[in-house]
Image (cartoon, rainbow, N blue to C red; front, side):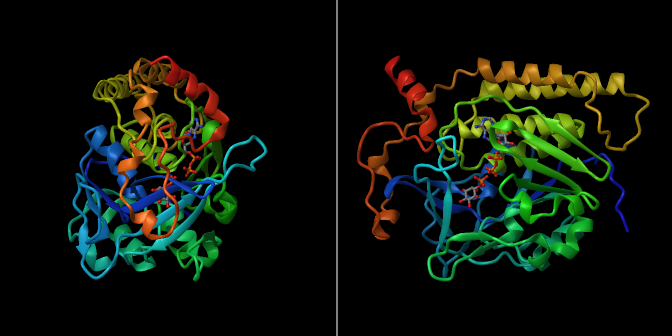
Length: 381
Ligand SMILES: Nc1ncnc2c1ncn2[C@@H]1O[C@H](COP(=O)(O)OP(=O)(O)O)[C@@H](O)[C@H]1O
Ligand SMILES: O=P([O-])([O-])O[C@@H]1[C@@H](O)[C@H](O)[C@@H](O)[C@H](O)[C@@H]1O
């Protein structure tokens, strides 16, 4: 049976499920730095930024190294999930780096019994290391009106000797039978071949993100390309997570799906412009919130006769909304050089693993394509 594919009328109470992790970023065998990671941290960073309240269920070990707004469940007998992300120079034909991820430590699964008893307007299944079990997703579907799923939570498997992440087809993942109950499924272009988009779009809305090209929405009887926000990419980590946070934030605030996807693209682009978890300037966030409110009022006044069906035409004023968000982003004064870390103070977890640590002062660039423009920014300081 096909689900009704409607524009969701979402309330504001959300549940985000996925473990925080420690990320170690490595380029050409040298540790560049260590950051808080995990899709849950990027997603909640966006939701908190635009003042959307959520409960977050995440597990970490007693070695967890960060102070976070949404306290995790501490598991004394497990280590915090740890990823090594290798950005060895590259090979995608345009000189950019491919990222190879290794899950080095795993905190453990989030069980259905770890979830709250209450009900939520929306849920987000955003695991990174296999912590979301089929029964956990099923419980989320029971207690949340609409559930957003990042496919990386479902299709990752980990090499038994070194933890290298590989992907399996959604049909083989043990989650496929739950697809008809999922509202939105997000995958990157790299993950898309494992989804079978043609099959999945019959059941739910599929969002395929494609880096600097923006994203495409697929619905049962239509598809739509959503424009990106041009950005100098420094670190791709968390772009997809922030995209999903921005998209959900847009829907929660009453935007139409194509407009919400623009907000996703905006937050994805702002994430790749910084290293690790991005800091969003308060002034920028306020301006984005104002633009969203303005857009919502405009859509309400011009679309009074619309029903709730998701329309695969861009709503009137969509392009103007893109321009307003782009202008808000441009007006942001966050200087690129704030992305620089004092790597000498990075905690020594990677050294424990026997990987030499970066001790220099030069800027961290995980994507060599952009080395020159960033260095020229540094020269203007
Ligand atoms: N270089 C970039 N320039 C502008 N926007 C980007 C860039 N990279 C990512 N984004 C934004 O972030 C979204 C998610 O990025 P993507 O790389 O597709 O996801 P993932 O991090 O899951 O691989 C994209 O759809 C786009 O909107
Ligand atoms: O970059 P992205 O694919 O959106 O998301 C990333 C995950 O793939 C990775 O496993 C995790 O360690 C990062 O912190 C981040 O959550």
